[in-house]
Image 1 (cartoon, helix red, strand yellow):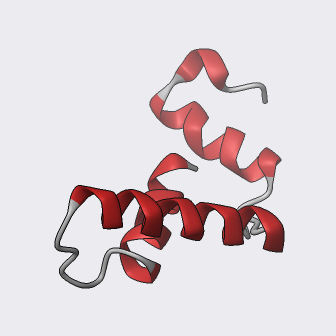
Image 2 (cartoon, one colour):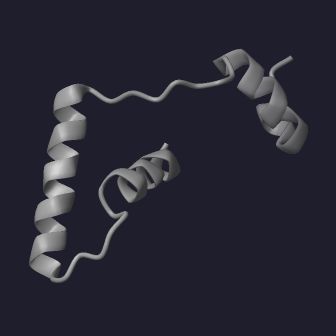
Length: 65
């Protein structure tokens, strides 16, 4: 989830040159507030059950089938 949010931040906020640290902080804070206000969510491509099955191959202790 963190990687998805970092990608969104990069594309939606950091896709240009920002001249000072103060402006960077203000831009990131404004982006964060907008994301939180909009209630941004992640649309997963797999169900939790499908993800567990897939992860079970790589991490047998997580395989619950």
